[in-house]
Length: 301
Image (tube, rainbow, N blue to C red):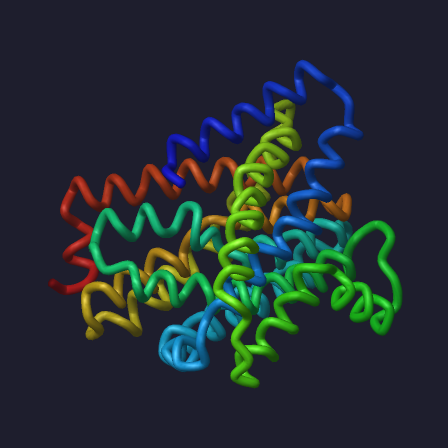
């Protein structure tokens, strides 16, 4: 999915919401995309892989884990001391910080610098495998209808995409391969979660108030911090690995993250506004790096 198509679908959601003005329709789209179609997408993405493919995630997965831990711990500590009065935003900040837009936005931007997208695909797969359950847990934990820790864990694992991701991982580790036709069918059905999420995301947008401070907070923990971590530790790697990990790790929050937050009524308006602004900024910065030639100097090439 190209960047122009992404922007068109977001705009379509915003325009449709302005015309229709019926929350029930867009809530249904959110449930369809996040609970049902995303489950098929996860099944095809994980169960369709071999154990050898997952073993190839070792090096890239290391950076996924390190980036997630860094962003989670730093955003948690920041929220604990500087956002004491707004528990909802503390939770949203952590979700947005750990869940980068590695596929819909990351792949096209990595392709600007290198034709080899294999490391980017590996990073995206590992990131999704870790981010979806963790983001779901944090969202439920900090939502308006939050519950005790045990019930939060139970609700997290009962969220269909999380359940499917764990079952799919068990199948892969057990060496059980699902029929190719079933995987292809799941992929064909699950793909529709992407455009529907973008439409749902657009329907949540509110331009009456752009939270500048929240944009800066999320931008620091989701974009700036991972960028410098990778830049300082991965300069000696190959070009394809360097650009894949650098760009994927410092992507703005995933539309999926904002969609999950909206699904559970956790700072939906602020999260969608922050995600949209940072997405546009990231696209602009990547193109500036490419056109100026500064991107090549980052890799030391």
